[in-house]
Length: 240
Ligand code: NDP
Image 1: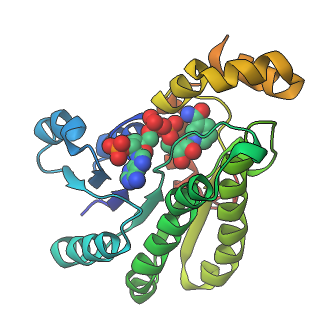
Image 2: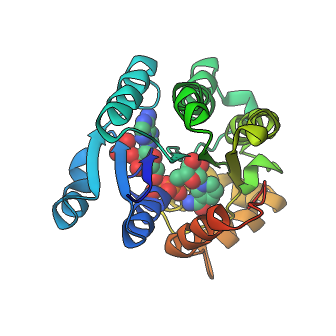
């Protein structure tokens, strides 16, 4: 039997690319997102390998129910990919508490709840892998990215502790830190009016936007291949 993956934010971008790569490797993917209709083509093309399951990662009860259901039906979860996310651009001064909390719900509390939900099952089998989609913005920050980077820094701190907590249980943790890749998230950033204003005003941000919207943002399929290879490597790196 192949691996069983649980992927969040699988309806586009990295999540979809990871789903496709895992399917090509012969594995089964429980592909989750809010817009499951965007996964209908993949599920129809690979009915034995792709299950499109609705899941909003800000819904903790939904997370617990989904994990229990997957373990019930498949007997295990080999790989959790905490990938769901969105862009946020705005001055720190203008970012409201509600916006900050909503982004933390999506990028931090949702992934933390998923980790809590899957770990008992991985620990029981003494095997498993957790992929945390952070960002270049999880290692450095730029004007306009205070909220986004704060959530990714939080995810990185959580994950670096986690790796040491689960290593001896046979469970891997991989923190992925992409730069600019061709997904709808990057399209949204490049197109946003706020970022155009920042690009005018702020050097470092302008450089980032040019990388993002300009010459050669990366291909998510290549990132997905690199993630699968890192998980299969004898020594999985902590950061990719
Ligand atoms: P996309 O916009 O292409 O995909 C984002 C995915 O997240 C969608 O499938 C969306 O699905 C899902 N999503 C958003 N909100 C929720 C929610 N509340 N519950 C469940 N799913 C949700 O962007 P990317 O593929 O680029 O983003 C994936 C991850 O990669 C993010 O964590 C992002 O921060 C990170 N990243 C991306 C970079 C890039 O250059 N693109 C660079 C660095 C990091 P739906 O709307 O159907 O729920």
